[in-house]
Structure formats: structure tokens, C-alpha cells
Amino acid sequence: MFPFNFEWIWDMGHAVFMGGLWYALTILGIGMTYCIIKAAIDASKENGEHHH
Amino acid sequence: MDSALIPKGVKRCPLWQFLLFTGAVGIVLLWGVYAMLLCWFKGLNQTNMNDYYGFALWIWADLAVIAVGGGAFFTGLLRYIFGKDALKNIINYAVLIGFICYSSALLILAIDIGQPLRGWFIFWHANVHSMLTEVAFCLSAYFGVLTIEYIPLILENRQIDKVPFFHHLGHNMHEIMAVFAATGAFLSFFHQGSLGGVAGVLYGRPFAFREGIFIWPWTFFLYTWSAAACGPCFTILVTKITEKVVRKKLVKDNAIELLAKISGWMLLTYTMAKTYDTWYWFTVTAPSKGFALMDFYSNNPLYGIWMLVVEIGICGLIPAVILITDKGRKNSMTLWIAVILAVIGVCLNRWVMVLQVMAVPVMTFDQWVLYIPSWQEVATTILPLAYGIILIAISYRYLPVFPNEPELNPIEPLNEEETAVESPVELEQELKPAEA
Image 1 (tube, each protein chain N blue to C red):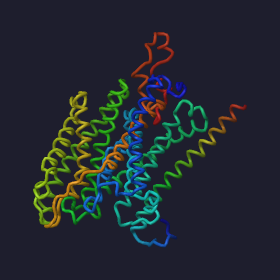
Image 2: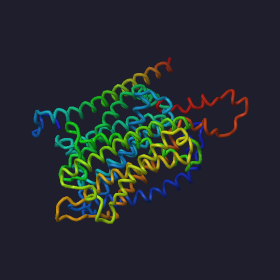
Image 3: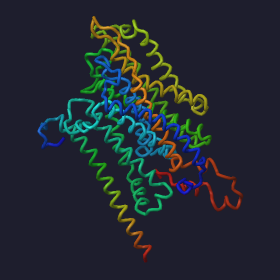
Image 4: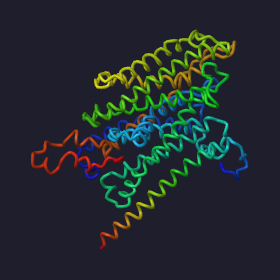
């Protein structure tokens, strides 16, 4: 649920529940994005070294 | 035929034997899938649930697998946050067992909701006043964490690891695993707790109702505590069963003993807290609602006071005392007894808090209502077990789940020259434990 959904109410319950969910998903998302991008960079560097 | 996929330095059974084993378990799996499809296509009339039993065998199975799957979050917490390095030899298996438990829990819920196509409603149209919403959020997110923790192990497969991108991805995920483990511990704390909270806030059911602090009844904390205590026992139990099946030692004793010791202390403190909670409930809480202790344990053929004695005494205190003593956890037989009792104890606790709650009459005209599950419910409850065995078999065969295995089980005796060239330490490094 997002604030633009019709059921949304700006109260403590929605802020804590939905905020907690987004917080956890954001950490996982950023963590995995970091790992994937860094892996792509590392792999391309390794390929470059092999070519030289 | 599949030898190129098998980790270096270990020996596996012939492929035909492996296929025969997984095929036999697969038949049980298909039986469960058939029952699951019946429930989805024909509806929940395939079950024996009724107005008394809205929560039935599935919810018990769900809570039980979540409790025993707690070994993953607690072992991860000890390994990555508290730095217990000895547990690096068992953490892969703890993650795998946790992954199986949580995917099973989600599968059971997908069957239980009857309309799995509407499963996303709980996220989009969330009822923020429900503890079960918190459970659904944390359960799904924690399953994501377990998947993230399991992926590096898959990437360690000999052939996958040859691809540079996957090799680096696995390495990078190891580097920040502490962040994922901490997130997992946070999520686990709340969903384990909220499952207990659901029972504790049922003020119309005096058998389950408990007082507490702020919005959390004491059952919230007891559930998290018991999962942290008994989850590692389940990890040890499955490890020991695996060792018996493959007839090999797979994990060094120091890892098992450390986990058993921590588990033992957790179990002892949990049992003390549970005893106090039970005493306060039957001397203060239940009488304030007009009930005496024996109202909950008499006039029915199943739920006697023996359940309380078995749950807290035999399956709580006894395993705790065994595990906290040096002799107890070092003796193979007593260790087996302790972990089996602890696992039975936590499963019994979930049974009592789900099904006995429903069975106890609360109105003067009510009677004890006992419940027998339909075969479809039994089949779909056994389904996760078959799925778990198959996933463990595949993971054990193709992934370096146990970093100690080559060292503990050398393929053939090495002569002096070979020993000098290929030491056990090098072999272990070659196998690359997924959490290194």
C-alpha cells in the first residue's frame, strides 16, 4: 500500500507498518543492487585484464 | 555423468541412486501437490475446518516450521553480528534449512488462504491493526533475506563459479552478508513475536489470552524466545540425520557443541519464563476471566494436564539441562535426545496455542470440539517435508554446503608427498565455504 491508495490514512499504524516494510525492502534492494553492479564492474575489469 | 557439477574433494553416490531416492520422495511430493490442487480448484471444503476451527492443521504446521526454521536467523545473528566463528561450518546448512522452512510456510499459507491469486491483497490493502499483517510482511521479507543468503551457496557450484560475474556476485554478497543477517534478525524478531501475539491478544479465549507490555502480550516474547532456543536444535537434529543418511561426519564437533550450548541456555531461560507465565496465567489471568486451571484440561479425551507437563517439563527442562552440561552435549545419545525433545516441545507449544485454544469451550453451553484433519490437509502438510528432503538432497549433491566435509572425509588416503602438496586447509579453501 502506498500513500496514493484510497485506503491510506496518515496515522501511526500506517506509518509504522508500511514504513517498516519499505525500510526492510529498501535495505535488501540497495544491498542487492550494490552487489550486482559491483559484480558487473569487477567482472568487466577481470575481462579487461585477461585481454591485456 | 554429473561429476562436473559435484564439489571438488567430496564423494557422492552414483547418479542412478540419487535419482531413485529423489524419485521415491517425489511421489510423496506429487501426492501433496495433488491435494494442494484440489484445495485450490475445489476450495476449502476439501478440509475439515469449520466455524470452531478456522485455524487448523495448516496453521499449526505453519507456526511449527517457522519456529524450527528460527535456527537460520539465530545462527546468522550469532555468526555475523556476535562473531561466533565456529558456526561458519554450520551456517550454510542453517540457511538452507531456514529457506526450506520459510518457503514451506509461505506455501502452506498460499493453500490456506484458498484464493492464492488474491495473496497480494495483504500488502496492497493491508489491515494495519492486525498482527497477522505484520507476520505476512516480515515473513515475506525474511524469505527474501533467506533467498539472498542461499544464493551465494548456489553460486559456489563448480560450474556456476567459473562465470566471472557470478563469482564476483557471490563474493560481494558475502562481504555485506552482515547487513542482510541483521535485517533478517530484525524481521524474524517481529514475525516470530507477532505469531505469539496473535494468540495472546485473543481476549475472548481465556486459554490463550495474556497480559503484557504496551501492545505486546507476553506470548509475543515467548514465541521469539522459543524459536531462538529450539530453531538451532532443529538445525542440529537435521544435521545429525543427514550424517546418518550419508554415513559421514559433515560438521566439526566444536560447531555443534557451541550451538547446542547456546541453545541450551536459551531453552533454560525460556522454560523458566514460560513456567512463570503459566503460573501467573492460572493464578491471576484465568481466574479474572472466571476460569480455573482444570477447566482447560478436563472433560475431554485428548487435552489433559499431561500436555502441560510434557511441554514444559519433559520437552523444556530436560533438554535444557542436557544441553547446558558439558557431558550432556558431548555424548551423542544424550545430544540426540535433547534436540529431539526440544523440537517436539516447540511443536507441541504451537499445537497447544493454535488448536487447544480453539477446542476449549468458552461459553456455558459450549462443548469441547475435537478436530480430525482431512487427508488433503495431511497430504499438503507432508508436502513441505518431501520438498525439503529433495532440496536438501540436491543442495548436498551439487553445492559445498559443508565446508568441513573434505577434511573430515578424505576421498582416499594421501601419501606423504601428496599431503605436502594438498593440505586439508587448501582443500577447505578450494571448497570455499559460502560464508567465508
